[in-house]
Length: 147
View 1 (tube, helix red, strand yellow):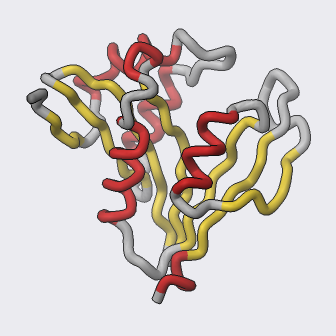
View 2 (spheres, rainbow, N blue to C red; view 1 turned 90 degrees about the vertical axis):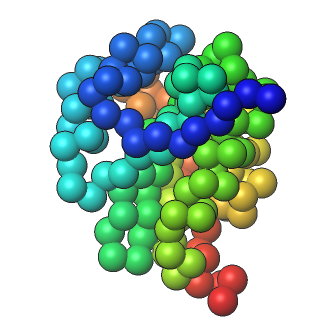
């Protein structure tokens, strides 16, 4: 049985984060990670399996809203359920009254399906949202309806 641990993302994980980002068309810049870590409203969830960071999420909480800012699973560890584990951990950590929202590339079908599995719905499209001109869906889940 592998050892699973949820961790807070800090500077000691920078090398893992930068390495994971290399697999993306538009990787996050190094400064972006430090800005997230320094932001008082931003929190993180990292999933380590046997001491190896396999995925992470940065999210921000403002009043009754949660914005998923960045969510990555290392390409070597995809299709193993780790993204679902991180989403479940997020739902445990946040207040049920919160609205969850995010932007996701319209061509990222795996991520869209994951978010739909957790009750998020596409509510709008942001045209040319990404630096490469790709559109983004805005997805949201209003947890108030669960009360």
